[in-house]
Every structure is written in structure tokens, then in C-alpha cells.
Image 1: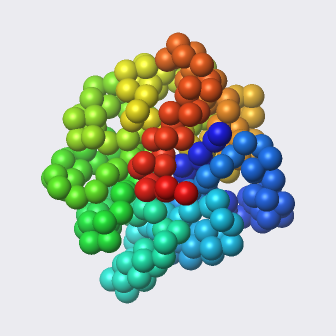
Image 2: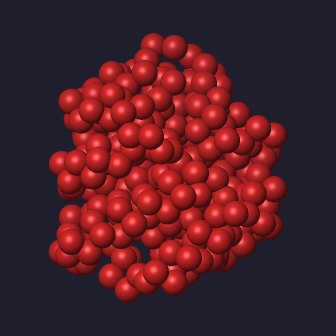
Image 3: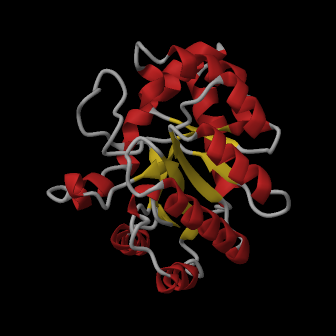
Length: 256
């Protein structure tokens, strides 16, 4: 009963065994996967995956690190692609100040433009925010007053920042980092965030949980994240998986 709400199976890390791996996911307890675009090329591949595999859905968007060459023609393509019934979100979009390029002004421009697009197509947003807590929060506070839902992907900020997002009814994507020994800040935030606002994710092939840390991640490894969260929340792993499945289906509007 696993819903991987954020994966990148279009990544070259899966080129050798993608089909075999995805076809075997149901037998590993994975019921749904949302593959998330990170560039225009990635978005196109993501759409193809969603059309090929019935249990795979797509998020269309461009990661902040890939925004330097974006155009309005790209935005129009994403808008048209969003009409496909397998497209359930706009993302991943946001800000990433870990790397010096593209400069923040470019990232902010395309973050705001893709937020606008999400409002136009009435889909939720998958938000990437790295070393950009204040700017991300400021932009979202100015935007999401009456539009769509959002999830902060790979949430890594403090309990205090989590409170700000809870006040705006955001969801929180939590994955393998929760199992790391040095993830005290995230564990505190996960304890504070209500379970009904948590979505489980992998960000695969990245951020594999213990005991696979440093290796290629995959959707069924969410089981280890659920186990850690069950220890933090002091409820069973089965309850964690059932509730986060319900959360994800509601967030993405998947009723099947």
C-alpha cells in the first residue's frame, strides 16, 4: 500500500532496467507513482512514462536549476500537456540557492510563472526549496490565497517553517532523509506536522533511506521511511501507509 508521490524514473540511472523495475512495483506493494518533471526534456519523458504505465502519473514542470533557458513557448507546451488526464500536478518548481546558477532573479521569475500556470490549469504544485526558505515562503504567501494545493517536496526546514506552511494548508513531502542519523531537525518537524499533511516520497534515484543510503533509490524503499515515521508518530507502519495513501490520492485527485 505504497504511494510514491515524487519519483524520477526518467533519470538515466534507470536506463538499463526501467521497464523491468516498474513492471515489478505492484508485486512490491507499490500502487501509485507520480513521476516528476525537472527539465523540459524530463517533462516530455515523464509524460511518456505516465501514458505507458497505468499506475504512473505525471507532474509537469521545470526545476529551478534548469530555468535559465526557459521560454514562453515552453510554458505553452506544459500548459497543453497538462490537459492529459494522467497529469496531476505542476512541478517540480521553486528555488534552489545551493548552486550559484541560475541567479535568483531568474529562478524567481520562472517559479512565479509556473505558479501562475498551475492556477490556470487548476493543478496542485510540487515545490522544490533548497537553501531558499525565506524567498520560497514569501513568494508562496503572495500567491496561494485562492488557487491550488501545494506540497513542499523533500521538506528540510525547521518546525517553525513547517508551522508557516501549515497555516497555508500545504502538504509536506518526506522521504529517505528521515531515516538518516543526522536528520534530527527533520524528525522534530515530522513529529510536529499532522499526519494528514504528510506525503511519502522517494525522489528516486536519489536520497535512498537507510539501509540503502548512497545507493539507487526506488519506490518500495518507502517502507523504511514509513517504519521510521511510525516510530516518531507512535502508531503502526500500516496506519502510516494507509493514511499517506489517502493523503496522496486526495492531493493529486486520483479516484480510481
